[in-house]
Amino acid sequence: SKTQTDEFSIPIFANGAENDGLYGFTNKARVNKSAITVSARGTIGFCCIRHMPFVPIVRLITIVPTNGINIEYLRIVFQALIETGEGSSIPQLTVPGIKPKLIPIPPYSEQTRISNKLIETEKIVSAVELNQESVVNYIKLAKSKILDLAIRGQLVPQDPNDEPASVLLERIRAEKEELIKAGKIKRDKKESIIFKGDDNSYYEKMPDGKLNCLNEQLTFELPEGWEWCNLLMIGTTNIGLTYRPADIDTQGIMVLRSCNIVNEKINLTDLVRVKTSIRTNQFVQKNDILICARNGSRTLVGKCALIPELDEQASFGAFMAIYRTPYFGYIIHFLRSNFFRSIFDDSNSTTINQLTQDMLKRAIVPLPPLAEQHRIVKKLNTLLTDLS
Image 1: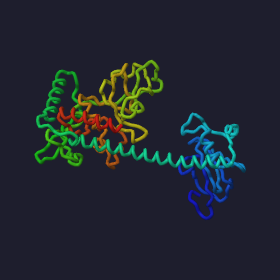
Image 2: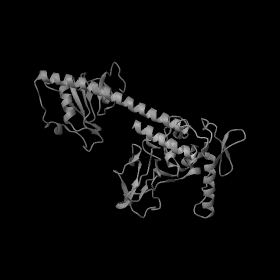
Image 3: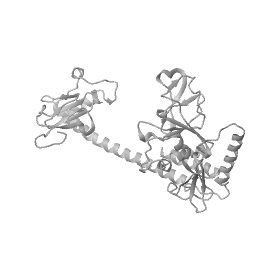
Image 4: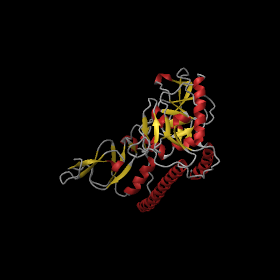
């Protein structure tokens, strides 16, 4: 039975750590003495003391101590001696593999003193770990709040002498038009414009002329001199290359992936290299923003880091995106804000399934004047460094 009943009251334990490996219930025990169980597969080495009668299944090794052995002490010894780890390189544990292990056995009274002391210590460690988790959550909350203040214009004071963001956007548009006329770039077919209508509502004008009202997405008022825009209006984005196992070449281009974004920085310890003949025009540049656009873990989607000066050319993987803008200092902080994440998530859980090219291009940005961007970035770098 999957649930405990009067008829099926004996617990069945498998080799998982979750819920101590409880699998279900049956009507006849196989182990009737206090015992230690050790997971032989899955969460390898997970040890648990079972005082009640039970049935072990699915690669669960059972050890019943003889008289004169303190079971709590024996559990501690096994936890120290047995190789552990989920997804370990050890394929499995076996009884023949465990039997030869040498175990230090003190007198029974000392076994008891050791186990009591270690149980007390484990409680302290658990309390410390719980406090650490609370501190980590507090830091995350503090960072989130700081970023929220920054993109709302509440982190640093405004200066009325700053050139307004509207002038900056007009200059960007004019420069882009000149490049298009000169044939140096092509007009993006997804290009849209954000503007304020006569009714004081904000609208997005699509390439086909359709207007989308943005009132529901724009949840706060901008300070004087700021403007709403989208990422395509102030930069460019691209999705990474796709390669096959046959394309991997130890002498090829290094490819940046999600695992290369560690603690919001680029880490090059784990790289894939592919043949140089594969889409070699997709190289990253210094101060590009590398973004995880898709991942097996939804919580990792959207994590990003600035590309530093690299010693060699690098590309980026198929589930990654690059955003390139002269305003990278402010924009990377915006990309880490809850506002950026929430505009893609209907459930308001700030969890994104994936980021597409279109989603990145149309992501709405509260853009400060350029001078204020610099002040915001300087203040954020100080505050966020103090919280690291």
